[in-house]
Amino acid sequence: MKVKFTELNSGYKGERRVPRFTGKSRTKAIIAAALVGSFVFVYILSLVGLIPLDALFLKAKVGISGDNDRLPLSVNTESTLYMDVIGESLIILTTENVSVYSDNGRMIYSKPHVFAKPGLSVNGDKAVVFDRGGKGFMLLAEKEFVYEGQADYTIISAEYGGNGTYALGTKAKDATSMLTVYDKHNQVAFQWNCAYEYIASIAISKNGKFVGCAVAGAANGELFTTVQYFGVDYKEPLNAQTISGVAPLDLDFTRTDTLTLITDKGAYSVERKAEKYTELVSYYSSEFNSCDMSKEGKYIITLAKYGSENVFDISLYSPKGDVKESISVDFELETAYLTGKYIVALAENRVVVYNLNGRMVSDIEIKGEALELLPTDDFIFVSSLDKLTRCFTYGDATVTL
Image (tube, rainbow, N blue to C red):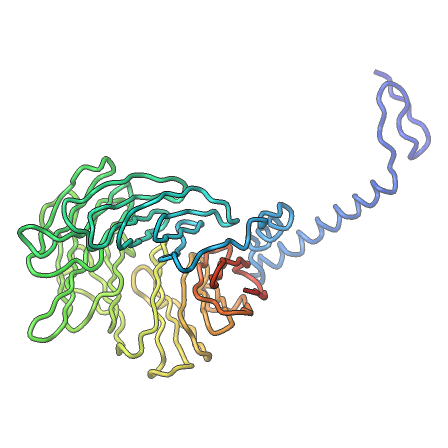
């Protein structure tokens, strides 16, 4: 095919035609060059650690796609019992149903229930809803509803974990309580009877091969907590450790072979083959503010320094139990949360976000009364009386409720 050139900007003549380089085309070229220059600039900033590249991409993606048209998300706080993050989505449990929403407010699915006292336990991208004091339960994943069943006895606690394994702590016929572990086919893997105490908390390892539980009791007028460590293929505990004078708050596998227990007076680790538990930190119950664990096994413990109301220490622990970072906060703190990338502190009319190196990356003003936060790596959802409002986790902002 023959192509003939003519004078500049007049286009090609012949069988193929090239569009003229018009003023509009020139403007587009300038904009494209500016975007490329901006990308190079922010990429350099990300390399030196000043701005996370993923946070910039997220803001650009939201700006281009406009995926926030469903937000703020309307909620009925009178019927809402629990709200939490499941994976990178939101799970809301009400007196009538449980619903999962994507981070742009789109409903993924909703399931009605008839539980008299609904409870919710979230573990990464899985959750179990159960009737506390009843026998019904539901298993949920972030993207789909999984299973609905009935326990043999009244449910006290529940957990849904790796490889489809789930566990129920119930009352029992011949014991005070019983731990029943099921495989992904809803078949009983093993059962363990607790003669005198109730099962307060359950943990399941990521691979689903190990299960732990914390039982709480009292002897001679003193509280105690016993951590039981099980292998799914074994009928008896692989390890059991009793810690005196403490009440259990949270139990989780921070590593495959390590259970970490957080209590009102300290944190402790129980390894599968260890002869003795390890005390990671101790404190007075009056100092304890909050704790939170991430799906990666890291966790934070927030303490009021010397019982103060406006001086707090937020300590970040590795899965091994080592202190990786400590953040001193000199404002009245309500609670703190941990995501995979950030520590999120809620104060009155203010949310402060730190990266895992302890550097403040966001100072968010809250106009109105924030009841609760639901933070992810990408967004923070702020709960008010009738809605959930979203802002970016990274970067200063103002949220009007």
